[in-house]
Length: 135
Length: 185
Image 1 (cartoon, rainbow over the protein chains, first blue to last red):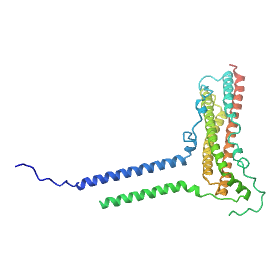
Image 2 (image 1 turned 120 degrees about the vertical axis):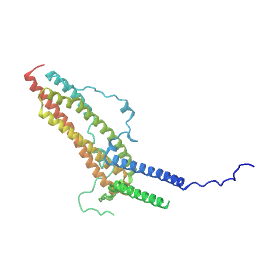
Image 3 (image 1 turned 90 degrees about the vertical axis):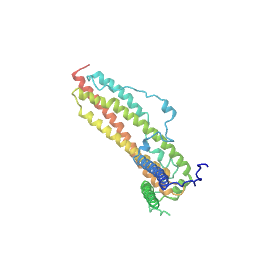
Image 4 (image 1 turned 30 degrees about the vertical axis):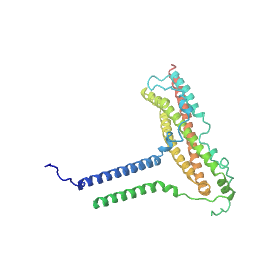
């Protein structure tokens, strides 16, 4: 006589296990939604605050190779302590003039030319008169 | 189970409404443009040169980013390595110079304005690039005029900062000559 018990039918998952699976699924979905929302919000803030325009690490705006390899020319820094004499100020003026040349190297930054009608191939506006109606 | 489904559906619905509200708020400026009338010649030229114009504007966007970075570092360098230490040194020496302090604070304010104006200008340029100049030449031109104005303001601010640096130099020369009378090294 064997003690074998009659084969049992595979037990169905209890209701609690079902609920656990379901909750896990919901947790996954909610996490994804939260991740999407926070990413969208941070991108909007990044864009709206204008930081995007100051960020040169975004694709298409990375510094050119020559910009990266060029070392800063001056490392002079005026000491913030010590006595102030004629000679010290002479030295200051000399270095300051050199540093200002860096700015002067750029001739008329943000000039009007690149956005002018002429540069963009747009003919001059007709003389003032009754405006043509737009279609 | 049914209760869970209802709850889940409601959460997704609320999230979707929230997302839609955020996206529409972000996109609203794109739909609030006024369109001005152009002559037929101008309209034709914009439509015809649309691709070339966009290409030049994209190039300009890159050049401007480079210029902004270059000028930004130069302004920062002058403030950090020269102007601020000189002011501190004068204060430490018990000889604060009101004129130099005023110029210093004007430089800081103008530099902040430069950053703000650059941001507004870049935003305008990007909006200009997003307009379909082939199908909406009037809208494109309108935005171009607005972008030009912002660029002109930015250009004027860079001139102001440069003038303030010159003023600073003049003030230092004046300070030197006033010191020269008392002590010569």
